[in-house]
Image (cartoon, rainbow, N blue to C red; front, side, top):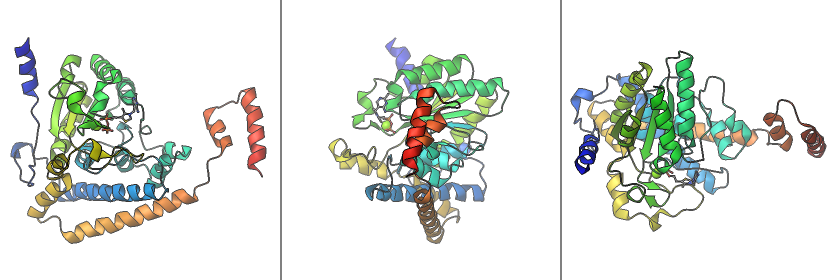
Length: 360
Ligand SMILES: Cc1ncc(C[n+]2csc(CCOP(=O)(O)OP(=O)(O)O)c2C)c(N)n1
Ligand SMILES: [Mg+2]
């Protein structure tokens, strides 16, 4: 039996297209993206890095509420999202706000979500997705259900979800992938393995050598990808999306990545559970540096291009936070109102009471 396990584990080798120096190491899988597409991918990563830095600063100034830093995970988040279509349905976790934004969620609404304002959860009609999930793993079972719904309606689209390495230790993770497998539902399950669940390293969470191999027990396909290599993440997602839509079942994709910042802005101190050596090792694999080198070699990216994106991002973020500031404050009557189509008697009384208070 030991041999069987070793045979399985050895199949899950990390897939890479660009190495740390931006050199193509897997030419045969290099995606067929136009120069404009390649530049757009870089623009999104640079923009998202700026958004992360600004969000951290805004949180420290007390202008944002809940925030889970994203720097380091751009290739995993945006490379996977870039392979999706507008009609695909996103079920993100709390760190996956960038995918929602590139799926069409206006930035000021993402800021309202951070502040706990209900309007941050009321997505525009054409943004197919749910609010970021806080309960670890819960989005995996929901994704199986959404994917089954898409299949039954004959849609040519997929349900896409993200969790972390810690999420794979939850029961919902197994239930989700198993159910989707049993119904051959078009779901893409991402595990962004950033090596830690808050302070707990992945080695303490599981005896499995890879998280991708957890697909085997559910009878679905699984891949382990270099999550710092945007081309590899894009290529695998694109292929997985096609196969899910063609009725070949759901796919589990583990991206090996790292978060440079703290778990959230609520006060954990990464120096208590990570070493400088480990941080440095991962920063050398940075997704932006690697992709920039690749683009520079093709004469597609310059310092000027990068500065332009940085300035644009700063301006848009400034305008969005202003818009969030000017948004009508959340009232108790709003909360009661959006929860019920018809108000029960006790809430009608409370409604009147609060209307009265709020009118003063
Ligand atoms: C069911 C549940 N248990 C515990 C928590 C508390 N909690 C919040 S984040 C987190 C760690 C999650 O780590 P991981 O899945 O690796 O995601 P990452 O934050 O690294 O992206 C935990 C345990 C929670 N939100 N939900
Ligand atoms: Mg993690």
